[in-house]
Image (cartoon, rainbow, N blue to C red; front, side, top):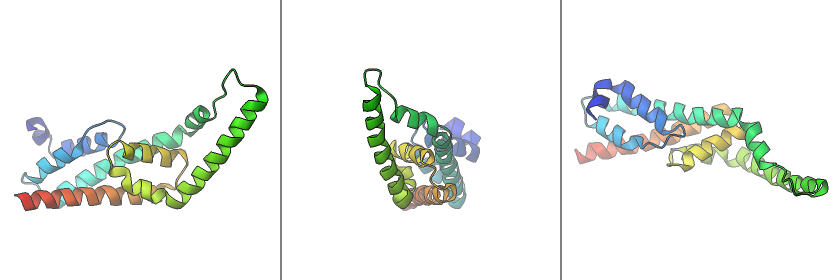
Length: 161
């Protein structure tokens, strides 16, 4: 923690960014630690929320850029299947995928908001990018969820001190 304290808010930003970008790292402990230092709590909250939001948006971007790879894996063709079986299987998967797209279009904001959850949050952000959920909506709801989490954490730390 001494090294992180030396890096200051830049270190907090980096930890929060990394912890939400497919790299498993719990940012909560670091935010709680910084909340006990002589930094403005609003500044700690802002830096943590911005870093964590941008980290999730980098995961969103991976999903958006890697959409063809992800879908290619989903619609992969097994060698042992006949051409007709492959077509039928892919038609079923396409129907499921369309239902999923419709679901995400309607309820994607919930996944974006819940992107603060450990491990699942990365999956939500990746999936939102892969289905091309609107960037501005993803950004808003991701930031809202992460900001609320850090607000509650910092308030809890205030009450404990």
